[in-house]
Image (tube, rainbow, N blue to C red; front, side, top):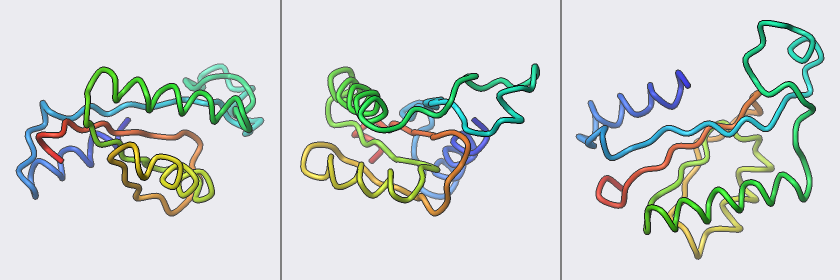
Length: 119
């Protein structure tokens, strides 16, 4: 959660966004890193990374829930693999305020939801 929280601090300091209007969220969809899966101290979800239709369904359920609970909220796809990030932006481009800063494939996918008042 360090990166999403750090980004929120940056948005607050540089853009004057009220930090109480933003919510960092992390969707842990597993990992394909065998060392992490076998490490008793690994804090992430200990299962193979979710992919395909199950992954798409989870993300879709999450995005639609954000819009139900916080109508007009902006969702930033943070640290998604490029192919996921650009597919997600295309999928939601006409339905949801969304952006991405993705440029690499991380172990976990981070999301930041931001109130319409701070977007």
